[in-house]
Every structure is written in structure tokens, then in C-alpha cells.
Image (cartoon, rainbow, N blue to C red):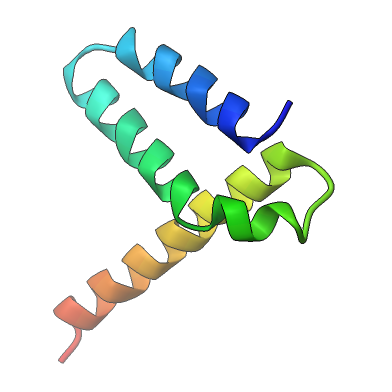
Length: 71
């Protein structure tokens, strides 16, 4: 199973979730797409590439949030 298949399964699962959960799930999927194709070549496991991509985006968002709060 490759990155596209994983994200496709995640999208199907996201569609079954209610309201805010669906929104958050779709955000996670969008995060996964940002670097997943680049990471795919660095990792042997597509799931590892997808998760790494999501974690990288979460870390970036946290850092941006800190910059907005801290002068």
C-alpha cells in the first residue's frame, strides 16, 4: 500500500466523522499531503512517510503559534 492509498482510506474514514472531527481529520490529511511525496523516498514504509509529514506540519504550526503569542 502506498501513500495515495493510505490517504484515500483516511479520507473515506474522515467522511464518516461528525462535524468538527471531520474538519480536523481533513486537516490531518492535508498536512500529510504536504511532504508525503518527498518523504516517501526517504522511508521504506509509506505510512511512516505520511505520519512524518503530519508531525512535521504540526510542529511548524506549534512554532508559528508560539511566535504569535510571544513578542
